[in-house]
Length: 325
Ligand SMILES: Cc1cc2nc3c(=O)[nH]c(=O)nc-3n(C[C@H](O)[C@H](O)[C@H](O)COP(=O)(O)O)c2cc1C
Image 1 (spheres, protein in one colour):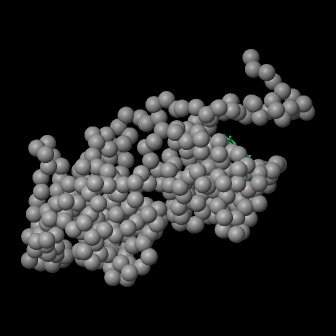
Image 2: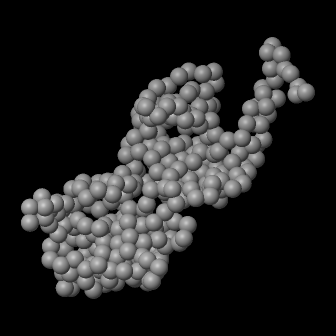
Image 3: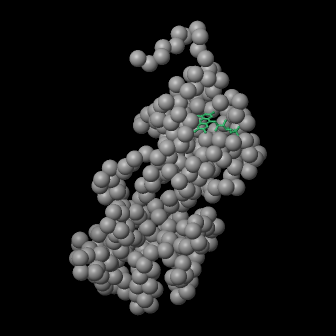
């Protein structure tokens, strides 16, 4: 039988220990103070609340030095940590002033700092604040979010813990494909720094050819819809969800505007192939640079015999035009 504790004799230390037997993940909640400085703390009081509207909550202690920032802000982010981030949890559970020097962060939608490396992130506007003893319950409405297949960092009885077999078999295959964009503007191709010294293609959630492309990270680019087409479909590893790559051209206005954080243009004839992380992406960019010279592109799909390319002759036509022919 477990020990029963009568209400009147609640010992806060024993209560904290009892609460601590509940297994949770670990998050870093972040916001900006009134001067725009990033503020954050480790928190495991996260709970998902509602899908419609999309709501979540965290509890913020009134004695935290970042309490005022969370109590006054109109937006905040919740970053779930992955299993290799116990050190990040320790830094953000401390009082050091330079917490954000140990992590990369970016703006997604609201401007709250979103950790570039995390298991999952949610960028929220404040839906409500509820007084609750020595904490406030901060309820957020999710405006943007992203997730990854990494294993979560767990927490129980005051210790960080790994979660065994966090991904059910077949999980990756059942997730959406990774949508990459090979974006060209005036003989240059747009690449995104991968944070490890290399480059990858910009990625986006939407797989629809549209004039507005919202990149992962929330920044929007404006494309010329008539010149966007599927360019390549492939897997890099057997277990990945597959890559769907579109070729697109930036609108003139977007090509002149400031680039999203971490993105850079490279001349098509001087792409940094040695810094492209995977051979599949390297091969695709080489093919693109080659095909571009003749303005005759192929659509690649990987297959058992090493992959196939179907050449497109001439320009892409609109569906109505193709139907009436
Ligand atoms: C695993 C873990 C979970 C925590 N969860 C919370 C929480 O949900 N809410 C909270 O206010 N503090 C929580 N804390 C404590 C804060 O991280 C800690 O008080 C931190 O120093 C606050 O930072 P600040 O004083 O710079 O704002 C947690 C600490 C750890 C290690």
